[in-house]
Length: 282
Image 1 (cartoon, rainbow, N blue to C red):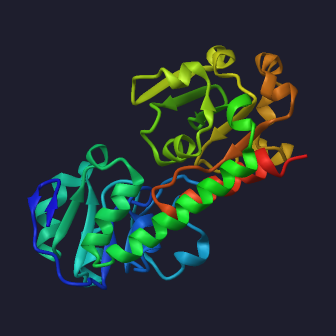
Image 2 (image 1 turned 135 degrees about the vertical axis):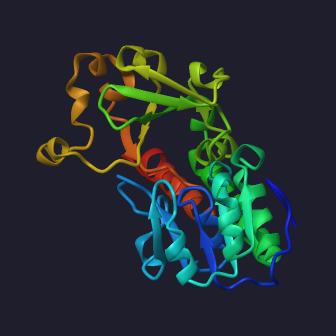
């Protein structure tokens, strides 16, 4: 089997899998019906395993948070396969001494549908992967029907909150899973986001008017701060003067979402949110 660092022999139908990324790699493994024995969790996130419902991860051992995994913990889990990201290559030799290790380079496999197919090959579940993709496509088509004219008449903007109330970022269209879903549905991004060529672009609050749209989605994985808890409103900072100029704010169509997703489980979350905020909202 080919992976980011060459060729590797993978056991048939591996059962004890350790996943060293909560955002991109854990979702497709779980979606294919394989419950990992261990996974790397997220530091300072609303969800320990981003984009994954809590009931799906209750029996998964935490092998580290955010950065370097605990090799001792991984060894104790006796995995028959380890899946890692490209930024963990420095640990590859040590991980390979524990179990066969597949390294996934995100930028070479950024399309979540192709990534799911890749994991279908690794886990011996290619047919399952195709069924999941067919279900996803059906949901996309159903959403398109429900949105109707909004696909042509409404614009959306997706900005990420960078752990602060005045620093934001946007991503290149199609780079991350949530933007791939938006593209599949056919929703229209603002021109500044359509034209973005940088993978990530960070900007201050003064640039927000350029990102105004009919629907403004603020994506974050950070938990509520104490101030937000006290205000009982995760978007309390919209009280700042520049926010009042935005059309989405004036029309009360600004929504905080958790769209750090990496596969079909998280894709369903994004589609659910688009139904909730664009179809079912009075």
